[in-house]
Image (tube, rainbow, N blue to C red; front, side):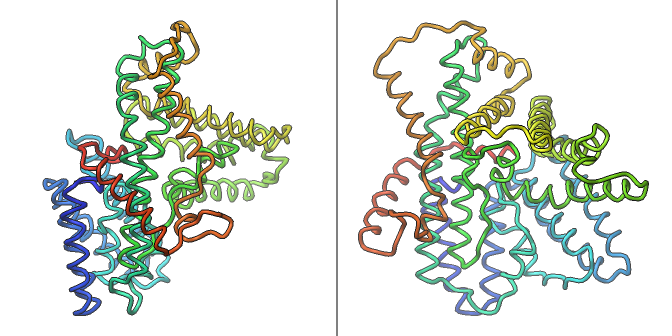
Length: 469
C-alpha cells in the first residue's frame, strides 16, 4: 500500500486520523498506542510475511538499549547490536529471494539509536516511545532515516497529542506537493525510462540522453515526493521530520550534491562511518608524529589516508546499502572518484569555475552515475553511456508534435528542479518568496484544485522507486 494509492488515500489515512483524534481524548498513551497499531497495520498490509521481523527487530533493539544502560560497558552492547542488525539486514536484503520491504530504513534508524545511546549519558526511551520511533509508518518504508536525537524528544514531550487545524493544514500541504511530484511529474516518465533502459544498445544519441535524463528526473521527483509526503503525514500528528532533499541538482560540486541528496543517509554515514574513520586516521598520524594539516593532505600519503580512505569506505557502504550488485558497486566507486577529484581540486586551489558551469558539470557527473544506478547490468550501463556518447550513431531527428512535447516536458521539469523553491520554503511562507503559501481562501481553492489533480493521477500500482532499497 503506497501513499499514492486509493486504499491509503481514502481508507487507511482517514481511518488513522479519525482514530488518533478519538484516542487522543483518552490521553497521550492511547494516542501513541493507536499510532503504533496503525504503523504495524500499515506494514502488515504491505508485507505481511515480514511483520514478525519488524516486531522482533523493534523488540530486540529495545532490549539491547536497556541492556546497554544497565551495563558498565555500554559500548560493547552497542557494537553487538550493530553487528546483529547488520547480520539481519545482510540476510534478508541480500540472501533472501524476497527482500523485506523497508528493512534498510528502519534498521539504520535503530542502529543510529543504539550508537546515540552508546555513551550511556542519555536516558533510555520508554517502550512506547521507542516502538513509535522505530516503526512510525510515514518513514517506515523509504525514510527519511530518523535521528533519535531529533525525534525521541518529540515523542517524550508533554501535551500536543491531538489533531489541530494548523498541523492538518500544513501537513496536508506537504503531502499534496509530494503526491503531485509522484503522480504528475515522476510516474509519467516511467514509460520513456523503461523503454530506453530495456534495450540501450538500440539507442542513438538523442533517445539515450532522453532516457538517462528522464530517469534522473523520475528518481528525483519520486524520492523527494515520498519525503514530502512522509514529512506531511508526520506533521499532521504534530511531529517534525528532517528534510531529506535540498535541491540537489542545483549543487555546484559533487561534495555539495551529497550534502543535498538523501540527506538523512549522508548524515547517518558521515556521523557513524566517515567521521570516526577520519578521526582514527588523524589520531594514528599524531601518535606517529605525522603531519595532519592542509599541506600534509596535499601529499600522496596524507591524501590517501586522511581523505581517500574514509570516502572510499563510506561510498562502498552506500553502494551496498542500495544493493549487492556490480552496477551499484561501480556507482559508488564512480562517485568516490568524483569526490576525490573534487577534494583534490580544493586542496590544490584549482581555478574557480563560473557557477553555471559548476552546476552543469556536477549534474553531468550525477547523470552518468544515475545510468549505473538504473541499469540492470554493467553491459547495459556501458551500452547506454556509449549511446549518449554517440557511438551508436547520432540518428536522424524528425521534428514532430511528439518530439516537441517530449522536449518541452523535460525542459519544464528541469525548470522546476532548478528554479522552484523547496516544499518547506513554500509551505512555511518564506518571506523571500513572492508566491509563498498562506492560509487564505485563494490558496484553499488552489490546493483544492491541486488535490483533484493529484487524486485523478493517483491510484496506480507504481511503487516508489526507493522501496526496492
